[in-house]
Length: 550
Image 1 (cartoon, rainbow, N blue to C red):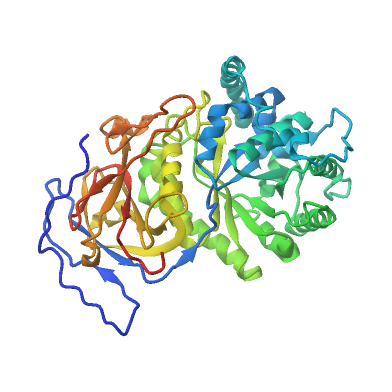
Image 2: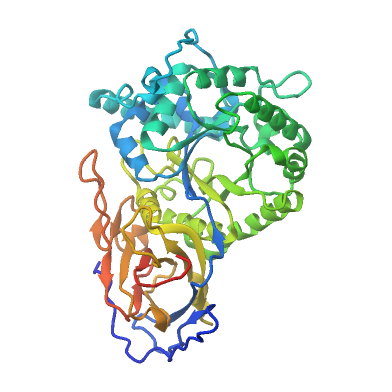
């Protein structure tokens, strides 16, 4: 696999004129009919860098830890792995959501007396001490081996749809908070909504016990209540309508308002699954009752069922387009009741049911993940929380041995290169191949990079087997471009199921247990076309784009 090269395109662009009195401009490259050698027409891009179309949260790409990690409390000590903390730090700023199906079967069970000391030094509280919960190497090795076996047990539970009730102690909370705090992540804790009174009202006693403990330790976090309430009847034989769920959230909101440190914390919900024909009224009823109590409305999205999907699904533009359909349905519902309310993808990945074996943890999953990031931002979703950073299933970013998978490297590059300001880009082509090229444009992230003001980042997916040649507008012909091209570590269609990835031809792997590789781009000569290999995706930083809004 060679490095990306650009051929000379002198004379390919039409003259470009700027009208001085009108600053707004749309940049467009003149169509060039030439064919490249592999049969893919040269594709021209239209960019508008004059205004910001959308702006998302700086923690737009966020991550989750599934509550099943707490099914046996000893596995929470994996969060003390120095390696895992280093991997997590590379994804900041981000939210860390702790939740999932298991959260509605968990109860806080304190094992020691609540400390009433007046010593409010942060070092007095275990979750603020990063050294205290650092996992020794031998213990980490043993836990990873045991966790690999535990995931099989959890997978079987998922298949059967039967969930065991479990208790967790202060130690589990301390470990979770220490991980979030020491990694620089903002914790969101999912409370159990299936603790209910005989009148089917949420019983908040256990949640208040947990919040009192967290407040006594000065653990700063946000909150959710329940996970996918539209499936409670299937999972637990309990039906909760939108109105009652809204009342439950209003009750939680009032509890938080009485707290010294949680009165200003975030409250997010209701974490419904994606719209289907049944129970679609739940979200409407919830918002009519509790939209003022939540800071953002959360919903979940997966493209396919992990048990009956295929390799082709993961790179099928029709499958990728279903996100836009579902997002429009949710936005229409939310904004009809609560105009302007922020909407989050509160849990999302490729395939539900724990992911698709041999697909969700391989290179091909990157097409779904990168397209979801691009499309979600373009449509105005404020945050996207990836299921999961670590946990059971196959859609994790970090595997059972705590080694990063292809989607992890893709996420780190996104964090480093893509800013929150969404710009417009369009593929100008009548070709039938147009749908196989998916393009997104943002201001470059200057907070985590050394790029100068005005730089923009184009990220692109090529779902075709053929190489695509991308032609930029003439105004950018003098801009140096830095390319980050990601391809499977193995060639051909079969290589799409590789669990390794190459960046500009270099295999990505950690230098050692505590050091990430440099993730370097390649400078391309100004004025030349971009070559995007077949079945690949890439980030292109236009360093001298001089976008006025960036």
